[in-house]
Length: 256
Ligand SMILES: C[S@@+](CC[C@H](N)C(=O)[O-])C[C@H]1O[C@@H](n2cnc3c(N)ncnc32)[C@H](O)[C@@H]1O
Image (cartoon, rainbow, N blue to C red; front, side, top):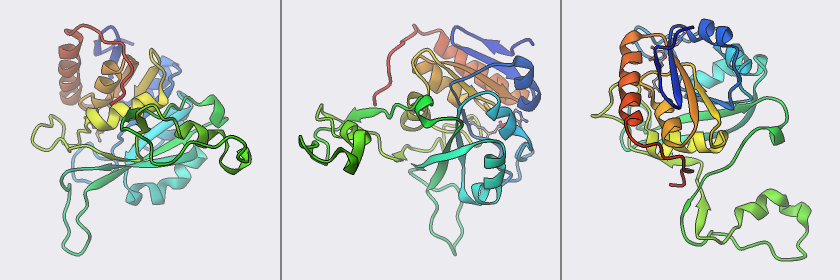
């Protein structure tokens, strides 16, 4: 299959990901995607039936953007495709995306994290950011290890960093977006990439849009494959990626 765009880290295909991905027969570390939820009047905004099975055949972990209006009715589609729920994070925006006078002003979106197989086999490295002392004390010697376990001990590292929180604040792309539902790289996608894919690993976005996930992977030293059904958006993604590829590669771990 001929890519629409390729560079040292990234390959983008133009087409329906439910057809492209089975043909590629690849294995990725994680799918990180923002699918069409079917919540707007945009022409492409139709939930693509069957995509969760295709994603499950491709990677052991999935981050999926959405809202509880999407996840609630479709929860069984995730589990029937083999996905087990791991956690959710909230993207807190600086402004709202839709307003209704009879609801709270909505300034967030949800990202759900799913996995298959054994949790221990799924790459999960919570990014740490500069943050001074952690809020809780270190585990004292002799404390019952069953009480908090090894996970707690790793939280309490006094090295001047803290775990990235599950509520991620990042300004929305309002005003600068090239895609109507573009997601921010900095402060949002970069953390999902760093969490679920090792350096040099492979991220997949079956609904690439303007290529934000691919840009986050590229800037974090990860490889990525994207699929986008619209040539207009594929072209925007290719343009963004080619501008990054013109810069020297920076294969460092994202920490902030
Ligand atoms: C919510 S948008 C993703 C936007 C992206 N997160 C960004 O930051 O630009 C979903 C995208 O999926 C594309 N799409 C819809 N159905 C598709 C399919 N079956 N295969 C591949 N892409 C599809 C749409 O054209 C749209 O650009």
